Image (cartoon, rainbow, N blue to C red; front, side, top):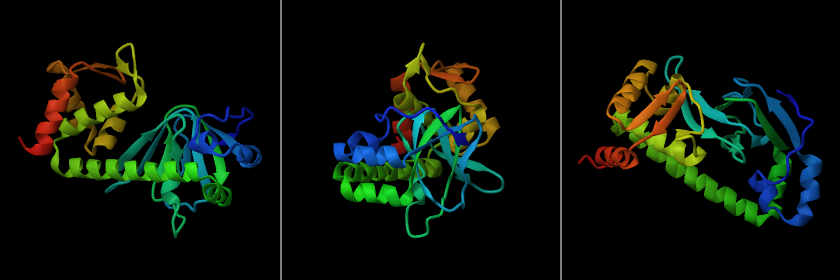
Length: 232
């Protein structure tokens, strides 16, 4: 990770967007910008938290160790998303890792300044609270799906979520992902994930093209997910 000479435009992250106008000079004075190469680690599970990151441009995966030498991807983050918030607490230790999936630029604020910003800017504090609530809901849903849903259902759910978050380009989800990342995101093996993707493609529900995925039958996938969630 190296410093970036290109500043952000002060519109991407919630801190810049929602802070009081009088607080913006303080943000400009305290923020730092860094550039990561594809595959580069932003921070690692177990490291001490020193601050908070916001993605200015690029995409990252947030992941943690799961079993013997396995990885579980908890979420994908894109432009404007906060990264490193899971380390804010009493221990100030990152319980997860974050890795760039493509060349990525991040804004960094040290922990003391970020906490001071929350005390001064109530709109930022409220939005952060709502973000934590949404993330908790999503995490509980994903853990339930890992325990009770088939791999096919989990992959269907993952594809719909990724399409909603990142949109489409020429019909394909605007976020190329390796099959291993799909496997790690859905809590299964590479071989099983690839087999289920091929099954969904053969059934006409999705289309595959290298690392790109297109949802062709949205309602059919939603019905598959609902039937597994309800057991009907």
